[in-house]
View 1 (cartoon, rainbow, N blue to C red):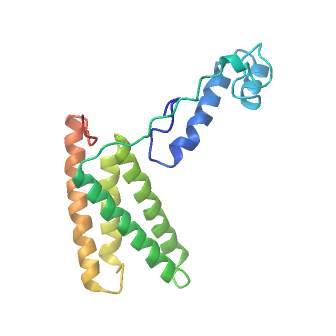
View 2: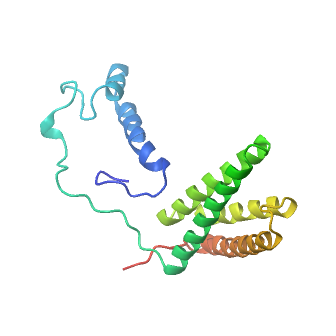
View 3: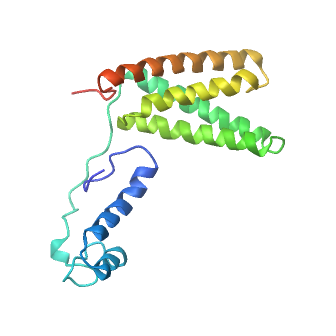
Length: 189
């Protein structure tokens, strides 16, 4: 993320980016009173400026911002669509069984859904640890599905187990390869 706009598909990064900048600005001040002003005064405030900052020092934001649209290979888009669909299916299963499931099962399903969204978004952003996290996410599903049926249809459970097995192997191999050289999923123009 930079001053020109959002450059991440994860949900937490755009929210935390500006808080990090406020913290950095407060830490850079030489006095406690200036550190507090950096937090509680306007975003353009600097020592010696009015409470909301000097309007002449603000950046020009009238220019249209470029759209953040990382170009990904077709295989990755298909993989992402499949796993987002599976996460949606997990959410639907959770809703159907929410009243009869123990809280621990509901918490596992929710954690799996949020982890799916976070890891796949991180993979779009080229986050270095996304491939090993994806391998771990798939392996965690396999550990859970090995002892507990996911659906009431055994053929569907077998298909899910096979899909996540192949995914876990693929991302483990990709993770091991990235130890030797950084993984670049984003297409180069």
